[in-house]
Length: 305
Image (tube, rainbow, N blue to C red):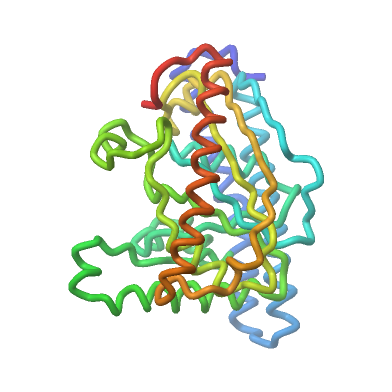
């Protein structure tokens, strides 16, 4: 255990280890990607895709080992019983920090299929990581403002087509798709600006989830509803490196997706749009109450932020 080291030393060491672990596992990942591109036969492509997932899971194992070595975090997790690696899942989580990705990967690695999540298109240019995300079939999306969509409604169809095309790749292999329904990290100013009806959550943005359900109605059956709480307060990745995160609370609920919400047309069917909004609204209200209870039990008062 290296958690006894002074925070600056520990943070520098943890960052160095994360970088080295990333470079170590991305090297064979890129080599397998090259083979996949050179030999495009379906059987080989499937084999290479499985091999890349195994490399990615080992990458996450390395990250978890680094956390264990450099941090003293109490992991309070519940709701993970009965998860399967041969099932398709949607994961819907609240979003507070980039640390959320690290936490969710730790919680679900080897318990369910490897997590994949929608990424903003410009992030494909991030050195090393952008190519790794692309190799692992992470969906890259162009995020448009409401004003842009009002002037260019065809952009909504582009996002739908991107979702449909990516989901086609997931039909033959069990996959987990992560969706941060708030669309952005929680901040008190965003919460106030939205006039959110929830105490600890922003208003959910349902389009991405609805597009996914429309594209994979015969595969997706379970929504893993995740509540994340950091009792030490708002955190950044730097806080993780420096050892300022002492406890993480994770609660997972396995919810059956109603059959009538699978394969519906969110863009053009107002009745379906209302039905899925009401369903997510109920889940969001229950998650908000759960987060409130968890924070109170942990001795944390007030809204997040």
